[in-house]
Amino acid sequence: MKRKTSEPAPPVRVSLPKPPSRVSLPSPPDKTLSALLPETMLAMALPVPLMAAVPVKNRLSTLAGKL
Image (cartoon, rainbow, N blue to C red):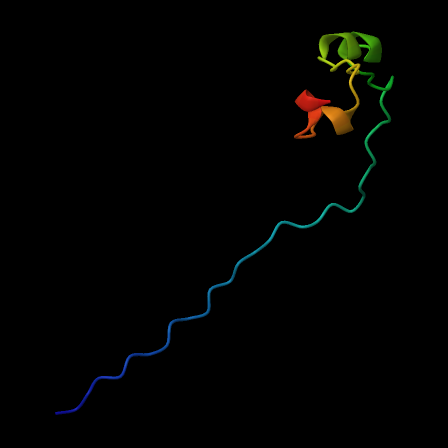
């Protein structure tokens, strides 16, 4: 029994769009963007721990209560 050989499929051509002949740069912004909130407002909103009267060495020491 003879096997029937199949022919290879024809090549598929993919066409890409032609690139533009001239590319223009975007226009510069009218004004620069600034922060929505001033830095002082942000600093007031953030909790900042106060300096403790007791030095860190004494606060973290195991002998702190005995001194």
